[in-house]
Amino acid sequence: MDPIQARRILDHACARGAGFAELFVEETRFSSIQLRDRRVESASAGTEFGIGLRMIFGAQVLYGHTSREDLGALERLVEDLAQARPRNGQDLDLGDPITGRSFVDASARMGRDPSDPQKDGRLAVLRLADESARAVSSRVVQATIGILHRRTRLTLFNSEGLQREGDRTWTRFNVGVIAEHQGVRQTGSEAPGEGRGLEFLDGLDVVANARAAADRAVRMLDASPAPAGEMPVLIGNGFGGVIFHEACGHPLETEALRRKATPFAGRIGEMVAHPCLTAIDDGTIPHAWGSLEFDDEGTPTTRTTLIENGVLRTFLSDRIGAAECGVPRSGSARRESYRYAPVSRMRNTFIAAGESSQEDLLASMGDGLWAVRMGGGSVNPATGEFNFAVEEGYLVKGGKVGAAVRGATLTGKGHEIMPRIRMVGRDLEMAPGTCGAASGLVPVCVGQPSILVDPILVGGRS
Image (cartoon, rainbow, N blue to C red; front, side):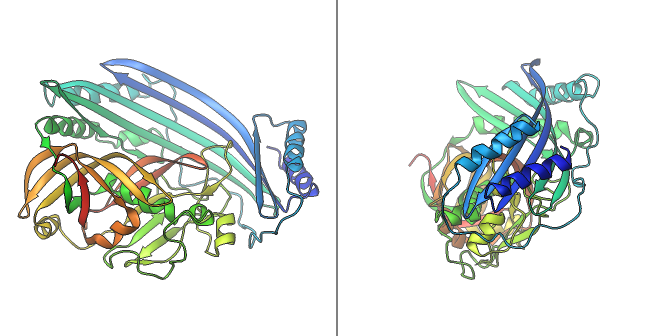
């Protein structure tokens, strides 16, 4: 967008009574290809363009968007929002303006852009993964492999004089395997991804990822039903961090704090977890799935320690959340696209590495469940109540790993589980994912080392 036109629109918004106005201009190009049963099931590509306008009147935020960039359309959008403005209300001090030069997001580094799936090698990668998964066992009955690529170019303008340009790129590979034996079916999956172009695939061990997914599905075919009851649980590293993300991460966003929908309200400086636990949200990790050089308000992202040695230190914030809740800005304002107003969201959220070895964790737990790989689940962010499936699990007897079990679920409340994490491993790993909340779906990483929770409620067969 022409900066002169952008300033004209923002001046018009302020003349209609807005205390703050912002334009978010976005163009996203995406492509995906998926192989199932050795055939290309789908292939798509497209471009999306739009402009989001945010106007703040007092403490009320009004937001609209359009796919047109002509002056008339944008002026009408200003008028539509101005018509809905409140007639009175308390002003909100947004704090100091965001400062800094205009720059392109260097963390993205476009790299290789997709063109034709055959020419750029994606079809060869998909076929190699399919062959590798099926080679694990004759019990593998289906393999679905996909590659997703997305590039977003954006420009931010606001009424304080800010102009920032960004170029963000993501590429993700995923493989899902179904194994079957005597009418029983089990699944396994792997889905690595990074904030880079297709060069990400050059360094990816496609064979290892496909075999890992297939191995897991095949192993679980012979598993017994999981027992039920309270017991020590060793939660595996990597995607095991999804429980902290869902049950504790969302309640540590100022969006939840503003709505008084978090059990952590008013607890900064208090012990909320076992002293062995430190939790971090870091938007600065190079090429990580959830990293950004600046957030969707233009604030530089940060490494934010949420919980330090068990003590709650702060919340993740956007500008409005920081102003209303009295916490520092963390550069966590995020949105799926121009269709959404930004709110505080997680980026790369993880429990920091501890000092315990895998052997120490198993020996310490005695009898319990080793949840090697977590699956999907659900959570109520207001209460922290969660329920997550275990994709791969094993019984532990006397500190020794025993038989595989299937059908286990972990149930509890995040803020109640945190004090029960009594040992933290040193095998920290991160895993990419997609997080949905008030501002849509955004790429995030979850992560943790192996952690020992004592006890946690396991659902299964009693």
